[in-house]
Image (cartoon, rainbow, N blue to C red; front, side, top):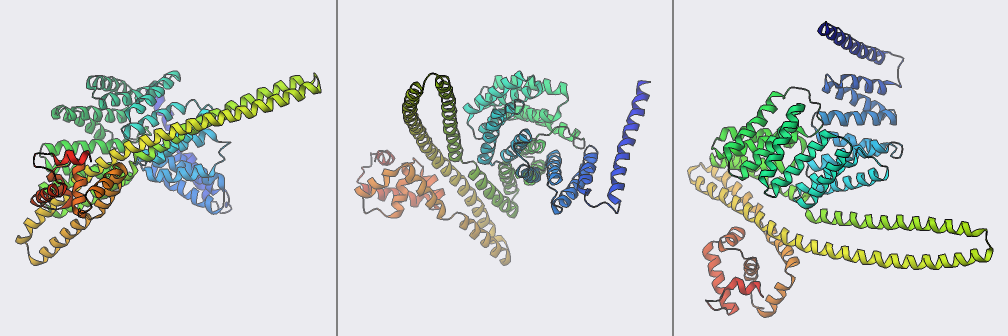
Length: 589
């Protein structure tokens, strides 16, 4: 009987829903209707949201365009917000970001503060997924200020968790752990068990990065049980992927493959099901497919690796995941290079170089550290300002109490207060100046550390890229004699493009960064040895970084024999005996 009743109720609901759709469509077709169409399209989009998301997007777009032409701000923003939600559901984040931005720029912020804050947080989430870390960081800090000011207790723990994710992505695990712990406490306080479990996943990720593998695995398996009980397949996919990554670092590839297979099964099983999860499932899929491609490549299953890498690349293109684009292009280039398909290897190597450079620009630790320091300093200033306002209010109350006593007492109090206030302002300025100087010192220390790290990472990147280019160029040269004249011309053109990519700009950029870190080195070298040639100075700089002859050869495109000869001549010019260490001498110069 209960089953029959359910069928009847469901049928009644479905009929009622179709009836509402038909009613709205009839109103849209009415010839006398002109001004209310945007609201009707908005209502129609909501009706289709749960059953046909593409139809919902179509009607919301129609409503948006009509309201935009009619200058109907209310329904322009309502349709824009709806489009943002629909594109999030479809995991098309760039389009979602566009419509959410239109919404936040148009609404009355003060009247819709919670809506504004939540939407700005979603935009920041999308920026982080697309590796736009500086924009994401500014968005989170802005939202956190608003949420604290207006006591938006439901949003605050999400912001702490998202900040933890951002610092995790940029490998600042200490700050990431602090944000995750704060988020976990606040979710527990709000009795939000689901999101508390999400944060436990992130805390397990921190254990993983610190090499605390047993704690990480224990945490992940606990989370697997929670999400399995809730039927939350999307987060299960992410957790299985995290377990696979741990076993990959331990070289336990069979165990890693087991968890990746579990993740792939869940994706395949739920591919065509409607998801109630509003998180970045496309991001998780891209990660799983890439790891599956890596494991297949290690097993020499090249066709399988190509299939998974292409799937990941497609999702990364659609959602502008720069890091994932770079990683997938790199592995595809390696696969095609191994299969001796030179044209395809060259094509994907260009994609790899393009997106790895874009990702490195976004992954600018200096900007992020500066933003963080600026936020901390602004926070100090705000705290001081609030304290001053409170003290001023207290002083005003004191004046009012003594007003009735006598005019002379009031005058005396005013004078004392003015003197006290002036002295307090001076003291506060001194404290703020001192704190600002301390913050600037910390910033400079961070800046120097950053420059050293940046110089090292730049050299590693240049070495890797140049070795990659040299290997492809060598294989092209080996291939050239066996080809027709037309193909030989094509091969020569490709080699020329490869050489163009490895230009003197790399040395110019390196020299600028080297001078920032080792400013006195060139001065001492030129003062003691003014007769050194530019090439010899360049060799000295590379040796100062303790680089091997092979590494110098890879960057300068000179043969190892030429580099050894240059080192021999350099010893003579610097008057260094054979038994003395040339690199040690340059390091202490």
